[in-house]
Every structure is written in C-alpha cells, then in structure tokens.
Amino acid sequence: MSKKEKTAVGLLQVGMFIRLPVSWKDHPFLFNSFKIKDLAQIELIKTLGIKEVLHISEKSDNQPEFTVNLDEKIAAKDLDKLKNQMEKEKTERINKQQQLKRRLKQSEKQFDRSLSMMRSMVSKIANRPLNAVNEAQELINNLTDLLMNADDLALHLMADAKPGDAIYHHSINVSMLCMLMGKELGWSREKIQNIGLGALFHDIGKFKIPSHILKKSTPLTAPEKNIIKQHPLMSINDLKLADTFPTQAKALIANHHEFLDGSGYPKGLKEDQLDELSQLIAIVNEFDGLCNGNAQQRPKPPSTALGLLYKNYQTKLNKEYVGKFIKKLGIYPPGCVVELSNGQFALVITVNLDKILLPNVIAYDPCVPKEQAPIIDLETEGLNVVRSLPPSALPENITKYLNPREQVSYAFST
Image 1 (cartoon, rainbow, N blue to C red):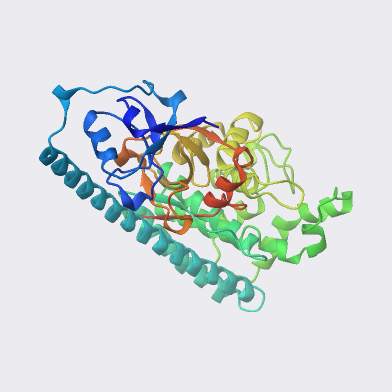
Image 2: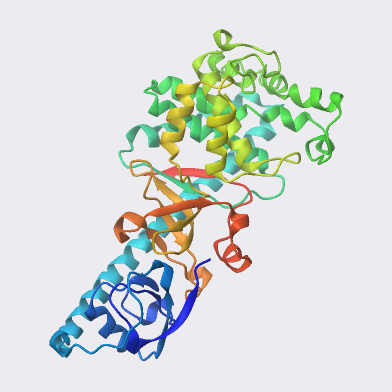
C-alpha cells in the first residue's frame, strides 16, 4: 500500500500526488486523489478551507516546500473562472456516470428476465418440452437481434447468484458468451442461435444429480465422479421429446466437456469428432467454471481464469478460439479488481468491447459513500489500469467497499 503523509496546504508543489480530505461533492476536482498539474490547482485547493492534504510521495514528481512566487500569483477572477469551468466539467461527468448507471440497471433487469425465463424453461422441460424450447428460442432470438444489430456492444458485470440459481446463471453466461464469440468468428445467424440455444440447456441434466453430490466439498468417490460425468447425456435425454430442437445444438450439449486430445467426457472424443460449436462451448464452459468455481474448487478472478485457459489447456482446447476469446474479453474483463494509474483500487464492471483496455470501473474512495460511488470511464478521465490483482490482496475495508463478486455473471447491451 502507498505511504501517505499529512502535508500543509502551504507546502504544496506542482507534481505532488495528493488526496483531498473532503467529500467528493465539496470540491471542483474530478477525483479526490490526483497529481497537481499547475499553480492554479494549488490556489483552488487553498479556497477549500482545509489546512492539510495527504501527500503520496512515491507517486509524486516533487516534494513539499514552502515557496512564494508573486510573478505567478493567480488573479481571483481567473481563479473563479477556472473553478466554474471545472465544476461544469464535473457536472457533465456526473451526468455521464448517471447514464452509465441507468444502462447498467437496464442490463440487470434484462438479465433478471432471462433468469425468470430460464427457470420457467427448466420447470417445463419434462412435461411440456416443446413449450420450453419455444420460450428458449424466443429468448435467443431477442439476444441475437441485439448482437447482430449492435455497433457499440458492452459487457456488464451482474450481481452474485442467489442460492439455488448457480446453474441458471452459468447457463445464461455460457449462452451469451458463446453467441458473442460466434459473432466474433463471423458465424451465420443460424449458427449463433444454435450455440446460444444449446448452451441454455447444456447443464439441465445436473438437476437430475443428487444435490449432496453437487454440493460435496470433500473429494468425490469414483462412482460420484461417474454420475457427474453423465450429466451431458442426461441433458440430451431431457430433450428427447422436443423434436424441434436443432440437431447441431444437441451435439454441443453432449460434447461441452469433451477436449481435443480425448481427455474429456462422457465419450472421450477427439478433435476430428468435435464440430466448431462443440469446440467453442468447451472453452466458454471451462472459463465460466473457473470463474465461478464449485464445491470442489474456489472461484478464480476472471483475469486469472483467462490466463489458465491459455497456459493449461494447450492440447485440450482450440488455440485459435482461445486466443480470440481472450482478445475479445480483454485482459481486464468485468469482475476484475485493478489498480488505476492514480493509485486507486477499482472493480471493473463494464467493458466496451471495442475498447477493452479502457473499461468502466467503480473506484474505492473513502470520502465517497459506497452507495454513491461513481462509475468511472477510464477513457474519459484519462486513466489507465496499472495491474490486475486478486481480491484477497485488498485490505478488508476496500474489499467491503468494492464487493468483488464471489460468482461472476455477465450481460451485454448496446
């Protein structure tokens, strides 16, 4: 953590990195922490009625020193003009942040609707399979329309899954990310719809597995492992009466745990036996499984999960697809905890898929209440990510403020 020292306002110099000890709404600056860029900013700080600021020396280009330079004294009228201009810019930023929050809220509502539809589909699959498939096709059609017509697509972080909803969240995650990648790979609309539809149903067979096995945290016995390895075929069996379900979508359900080197399950198929859709869902399913974990393994940060896909699955997954998947999500996907160039820690909540290195984040600021924390557009604010780090590396107060997700769910919007 950075060392902070109290420094008198009269000792401030251009190039010092400081933190203002007042509420964000009580000053004209965009951030509470920043590097002083000119004398006018020092004069503005003096008008705030504070005697000291926190100086972060390791991020500073200059150190505290008492100096008086009458030649560069800022006229009061010029200072007022600068203050008004900064307050206007800050108001514009706040309005833009409110737009981002509304966009995120809309995505959350859409995700909740998708969850409700998913629960309805699963409840109908046994006795009314055609109804379940028709509802799924309607959902996938709507998502495909959004995908195919969007020029400015964003990926958002959703709230944690409620108890009992993990399979629904996982299924929607895998479906949306598969469709997103299908578009990236230049697939036809029909092909994108097929992978989206198959992904929605790929894990419904798990509802047939006793919950004490799925929730078991101690090592599984060989028979228990065998039961879990049958869930892709159980999913297919649940769809046997849905004669309108596409054959291509059924194949990817059966194969979503198969690997190119034959080490997957349930049949141990190899590369030449796996179609493109099966090869893609294997990647997305593995990524989401790493991010969200299960009773046997702890969840991993999204950036770590992407790294593991690249390093540990060289012979198992389609390298071209893995490379494009990492490039599409970026090295700081939603759900990552990062350190910014101004020294703040932040949680990535939205990634504009055309600007993956400049995500939108919620940044920790002890002077701003958690519920009022602004969404910061890094591109607009001229900031960048210095590094990604595990949530466990954060102090407890910052972890509580940012609330890194135990489970990562995504939604996309235009």
